[in-house]
Image (cartoon, rainbow, N blue to C red; front, side):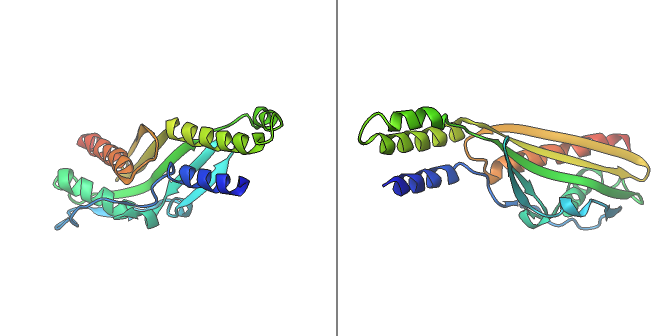
Length: 192
């Protein structure tokens, strides 16, 4: 019985997680008048999920972003700044998309004390603990964070966009933050 409750809670918590892939519908640019280079560190190109005491952090790499970061940046710059960037070289040095989900906690010692209170206390304690964890996970504010850095010839650019969401972070949530960051890069581009 205890295993049944733990499994049910695991499914509830899994539903509160983070999306695994993000796709932005955009046509490949035609007639790009500038050069692009990808100088990002290798560790930024791969996705991964890392768990620690503070919570879970999901990193979206090239394998979970479609189109990949260099193509996204090229599309955004082409759409708004193609003529201004003619003959220049755009170098992408950082492009990170992360989702942080803070750890939900339960006071298991108090629940263990409740479990000793009666013949069915252990069942109720596990159930209450799992439901509490699921509820806290849903209420927790998750942070989507996008950082884009690089340079156009010798002029550096850097931008950070972040949004906070409750419940499960969806692909649309990540897209919103990602497009905000790319829009910020374009707005900086007027100074190039």
